[in-house]
Length: 422
Image: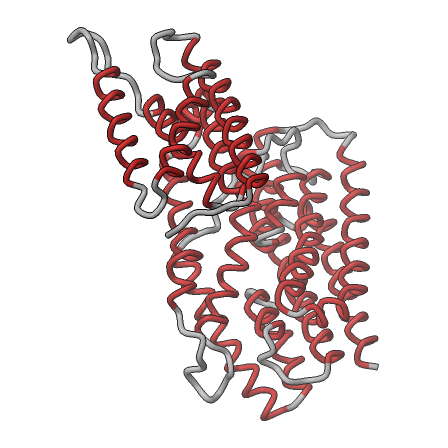
């Protein structure tokens, strides 16, 4: 391999190498030189190492033998320099030799790769140096189960999704395993993000913000939790009532996002109804929240952040997705448009996400107006179920106001569906 750059480009790359090395050296000295002046590296050493690495690479770029010899010499020097002089002296960490090696290799990287690669590597190293204390503090702030949860999320997204086939496996539906798991990943991503915000973003209020975030992944589960809190409070609390209605309002936002990801045409057609329903729910929640100002805040009624990301839950969602896809195809063939609308009312009693995602991914071949009406009927049916849950878990006296508001939203959804079908 021969290396050739126009002289002006070579000069610019070398100037960038020196600038990045000085930037890295400044960050290194701020962190390590204040603790140990003898630590190798810094604002003079790093530019020298970077230029040395670049020059050794330019001497013989075909096999980079001179550059490799320089790495070996640097490794020997660092080993000798960093070896503890006394048995009771703790050995230095790996960041010191790693920074020296990075300074040495940034020259050839800048010469052979796009400039953003060298910049990204250097900036990443500087951020890791500057955030040393904060990163070490994560050990005490992040529970071990959160790391396991993050690992599960990466399994869903980074391992299973690329491996599933993208070919139909049954003639009853054109959905592929990839489409099924992509729907699972979309819902899990939204759920996991809202969970992290709910758990780690401080909330001054006990019910409203957790309810809004909880509604982003399951308005039904959030309604049940809040209804239980309403019963525990022993009286009708306006802040909890506002949280129940706000969680359902967020359901319309979640559906809009999911539809926009998979079917922009359908999302645009449904947008006016979703915006109107969200605005209605938000207005009712705001009204209840103003009433809550007259009541003392009770932090014991805060909603716990329950992790929605479970492998078992993802498997159940995928199974529901397939079952509803098959049911939609059968109902469409046997009963036509009316069959789909009846199915929408039925699935609203459980989880509407698999039904909505099936429609968004094109598993139902019907006019857009019918698909929009089916989604609205499913949301209305789900709101009726949530109203029943609010009364069942919270009691009629305490939960009648939020239940009535959910029924209003259900009626508004049915009315909007009727308008689309006219």
